[in-house]
Image (cartoon, rainbow, N blue to C red; front, side, top):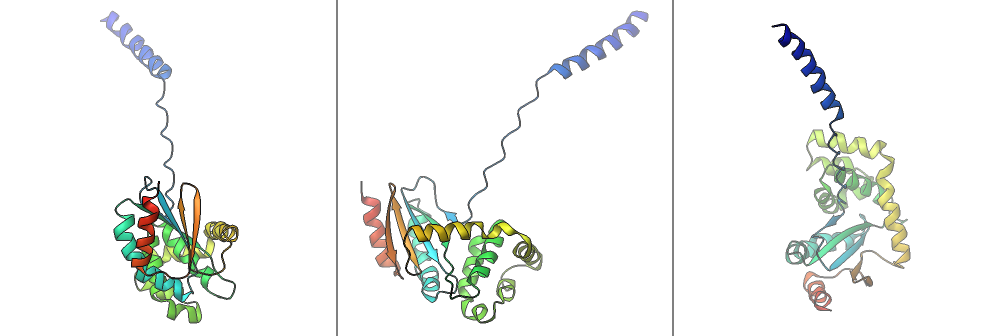
Length: 210
């Protein structure tokens, strides 16, 4: 019995020492945040960068009439990626605010839902800036609290807007909407509204290029 009493403390001390010396498992790196303004598969060889202003009626038409078909035929099938770029024009009073609401919803994983609603209700909120009322029609009360808090307090919501506007200046934008079709580092500009069949035909040609 005396030997057993001596062995137990010794085993405990030995076990604790072994634990102290055991290497700790390396921490997994934090996942890279997804760019919610980018959709499509990373393996796509063509990217469309779409510059829009939320108060622009032609941008609304492009987004609601052309892009759903492009999304179905080209984005979901892995042929292209689409990157939304904000280019609020100086003459539009509430366009930048609308971008803040869209980006706030994007932080919650609801970017496309917000963009669709903002364009759909353009005629309403563009009169008075009531983005709250427009968004509340499709977002739950709890989601609206989070979105409004981000719009009010998150200074970084404008970061992508600033970067997009600067990129638009480099692309020599003269109007919205403007599409930059990118393949192999080459950027081709398409200005103005394009119906889905014409844009689709053009994309087929670009995708087929070697």
